[in-house]
Length: 283
Length: 280
Image (tube, rainbow over all chains, first blue to last red; front, top):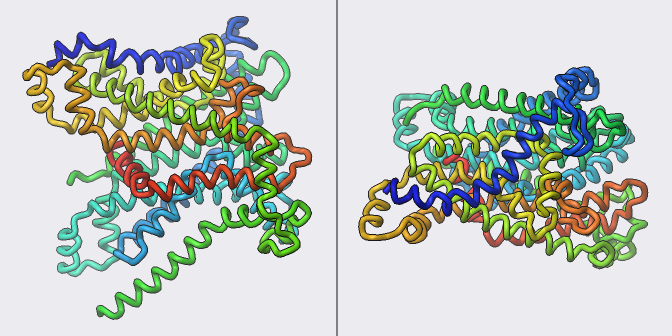
């Protein structure tokens, strides 16, 4: 079968491969090369060595964006996963209306980042001005917590669905046996349910981690970095370096920042996958 | 014992009901304010229902639809999403079947390249991608699906390949022995089995393409074409004086179709997401 299939490679693989080459491979390699160049368009690049990388690491706004990204990521990952898991536990108790609640909590996930950002910008600004505090454009603390709430609202439902699927896979007789042996519900949670849903935890951690690192739309719409780039995350910082700063050096520096950013995301996510995968039990 | 349990579950249901009302409140608030006249949309009255005086009917909606090419944007978004999802589902399932059935170094390398592309942030390629797209004349809504096929291939191939591996080889082999060509085998035997995964992939990719903001902003000629997310950003982003009424109406106009689609296909969407994650 393999042999006759091979003759059809062009029809099965070529369309995807061609688009993948245009959409990913060429831009990726070109981007990698351009991070060592000074340029304003692809055609006028002059080689510049590691100059862009040195500039990138000396750019304080970039370092601050990195720190802010990590702060958002850590808190939102914990917040989203804990709440999603608790909701999933509640919704697997065979209550009335489970399907309805599930649908409601999942809903915000379908709304795009830009629209989400503006919904929460309007809502948070109203709450802030009613309680006589500075609005989002002037208030970095509110911008930070606003971002966490927004991300929670957007992603908790999605992760909850994954946890529900995981919890439903825990065999009933295993839980029954544990109860007969006198295990408390608390022990069942920590010693049976959590180890058994470890594959779901791996996926949810991976998704929340990469989502919060790559965040752009929500950041742009909610605060756009205001006040004074205090709430700017990695992706937004890179975009601004490319398109909002005058001077021909910035595009190269932006591309170098993008390479650094990619390396960070790839390393952190593969480290996380390795770490939680090891804790999965075979069924 | 039994009575205690049912009391507990009533309490739990009440808690969940309160939570889900709170969960929907942000959308309700936008809806409420989108129905008010401009002068009544103030921070002090933001949490009040529109009354006889402040009620504006659908004026803000009419405004939003008429003033800024909303319908054109709706068409672009719809066209891009439908063409991209169809292209991704068909091309990537074929590609995934091939690379999981033909064992070679090249198909292995391709698989890992697709997985790698899922993790790389868009900022890495955004500048060079927009230049490549300009050069190849892919910078209009009618050709944009090529870019989405390329950039969305990672997730799709990954999910399809995961499922193909669980299909026993014998079925396909016997079809081939019976004289099916690889194309017939794929479309008549493999494709029907892949249907649930296709729904998952289709839903996930549709959610991504419909809501995507940065890619179309950079690739499309922004003066000529705006997708829905671009329109919202353009409307609001040019700070200064924004009329809040039409702004909130246009937010609702983008949310309402999503809610309708969701209510109709809720079961499939939630199942699709769960299945997609388990396979991933």
